[in-house]
Image 1 (cartoon, rainbow, N blue to C red):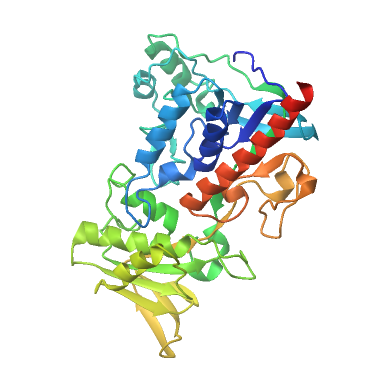
Image 2: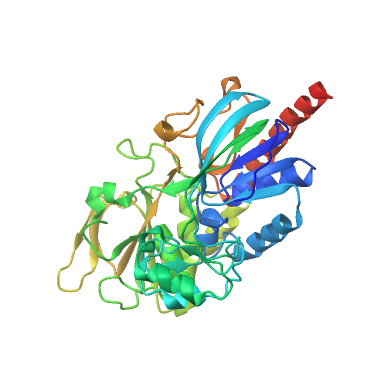
Length: 428
């Protein structure tokens, strides 16, 4: 890795999802020196794993492509992938940050030709597809991955596959001797944009995610719906590979629940409404979607989208918190049990497939933070003078949709810019 130069007028952005990219670009385009670190091999975060946005149902890759183009064109922005923050010390305007960068085993000679992937035989569960598909031991996460450079899975290092990858590369891009590297930087301000992760559905015991093959999560369903996803865009039952045309969507799966996540994750209702439209796109009138909900939280501009979905005769809304799920052994159908609170009658409804709208929680748990910072009971960073010049952006600050996450990132960038401007003024 080339030497990383930073000063107390540099802004460090941690996390390369939509919030981190937005914050880094806003600051860099204002003329500030910015270092953006991302723990994965490429930027894009959870947004890169979406099939469509609500309410316009456009494809996220359009916006990501624009951001990547902006990143490539800006000389004030330095990107470090496979990199995590391990320690933060110091004070506003003068932080010492320790970074750990894992080896990619592929250098900058890479042309993304794919010869290494062709040569490698080992396959692993694809993180990009939430484990629904496989990827090679030499891989690029997706077609829009930036940097557009392959990475070798560390599990193949020391095996014959690693040697095959090196021999297949005619550009000398495979470097099997790469090691972990530690870097210490001085920066003036930090924007923490490490994003969110889906709540672990295995913890919701009554819903049987860990026992029933045809109970999946909303993020898995999203990847399944993507034509470039693990099933080629087909909504398939994991148990038998048959198309699922009678699909149940369970809202607040693990959210607004004192036993799980107490908070509302804000995006789940709209995500499920969006996901019902995928069924109509694929099957026309030959489908049935059932949305089990406590209440639908659609406000402002997105209420129009809710009303449109509600008007679809093939979509049924059932006001109920599902009590439990069992499985019909003969058909493999999940059977939902509960009480419809609008009619107060009990139901036991079979479906081809059940999609759990799992909530959002911060990607970095409170006890794993490399610095002292004020965090609320949900694990989100809250504004506090004690945080100094460390500012939360996007879903590090709260459960937010993409639009609000980008607004939060812009606010974080402005606060960080003010800090380094004061530093520059003091030293000038």
